[in-house]
Image 1 (cartoon, rainbow, N blue to C red):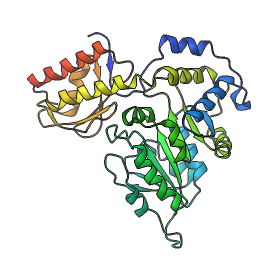
Image 2: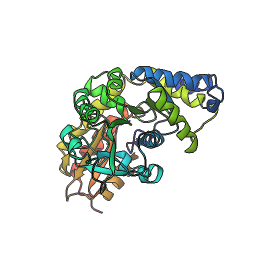
Image 3: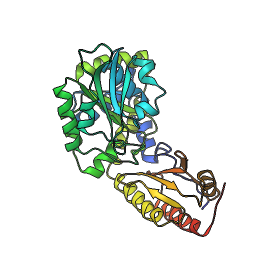
Image 4: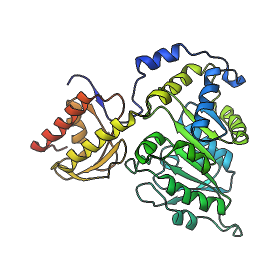
Length: 348
């Protein structure tokens, strides 16, 4: 196949023709003045969808997460999160740099913490040797957990611990729609449990840019000030917001296709002679470990020769991410290539 099959991430998607048309047709204004009607419509739409009062449009999920942490915390305070969490692993040390806060890192199961683990990591307020616990952050779905996800019931249990200890609860919803598609839970109910939610629209939903931070009106008022300081005050951003609105209206239901293809990849990999193990596939992320038959660099190179791009995700670890730019023809070709590799011994 001459067409490139890019499985490195679901961030690599291109706007569809209909999405581009919506972008070009968007009415715009100056968002820093609050005068971009399309941005305002996106913020309201996302807030209503998740049962929150208000929203704030930002360029990236890292920015929405870091703004939320900044608003919720202060220097000498601490954030509880899983050790694999994006806010800890992939946001450049932003918790320390932007907020002067520290992290209590929990060794959860595939990125998921239990209420008991959260409670065990809450610092005693009367001991000055420790930072003050201020925030708990969940990631849904969990990237390094292979697309694992919290159910609403699990979220509710952690929320109860947070409320009992007067802690804020933040959601890094980088792939929250994948989690919702797999769990069948309602986005509307999330507002019952989270104090803030970051909703990314440039991953599974295929928008070119953008995340929305959700919370109470007072929280978003403070967040808007932090966004300005972080350099996130965009002007005629409605062209980008229009793509996000289109994605919310048209690309949520199709996530089940991505999940189906990921499961089919899992089944082929489990039967492959060069694979040692595969993380259970629940959404659109497939993480697997190669055995001694094939080195990770050689595997990625062998795929590249077939015009297939994949990510090395650690020693002998590979990640595939399915998304809307992968057609059924591409998917079937990929399955055939993976099966054919059983006949080869590829070494670095």
